[in-house]
Image 1 (cartoon, helix red, strand yellow):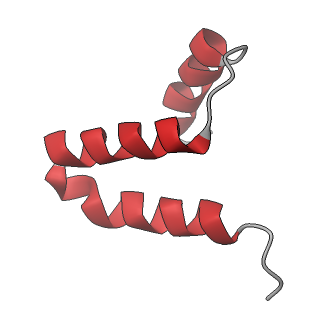
Image 2: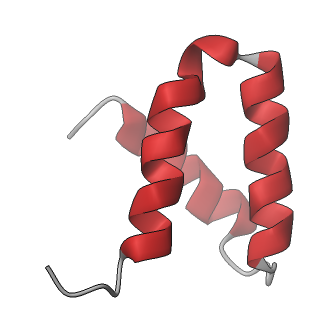
Length: 57
């Protein structure tokens, strides 16, 4: 198990039943990067991953 799995598991436990749109998620990601600029590149990579998840290689 990766260290980050604990955060993912907490997210799922606390928010697993919530329904949100991707605009809300994008706003939260921007807020996170504003507060934690050192994570700008990983968050950018994650956003691109989510955006392209259904693209064929």
